[in-house]
Length: 77
Image (cartoon, rainbow, N blue to C red; front, side, top):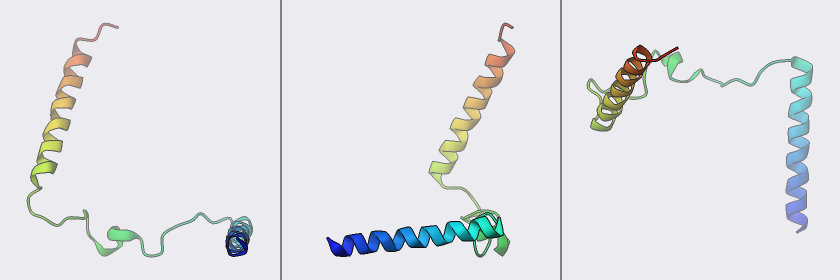
């Protein structure tokens, strides 16, 4: 039980120190490397053609957009 309490107190001290650092510097939390955009990669998968699941998702979204346009066209305001 004392190990749990010691670990909890340690994490509270670390979070407190981080919050003091935030208050002093007024900087937002940000990533260290910038992610895939920093490497010039536009998407996570460099496949020339999307997979079947992605194609199905795109078709569903396209059908949804068409239904939405039709609904807006027939909307009574």
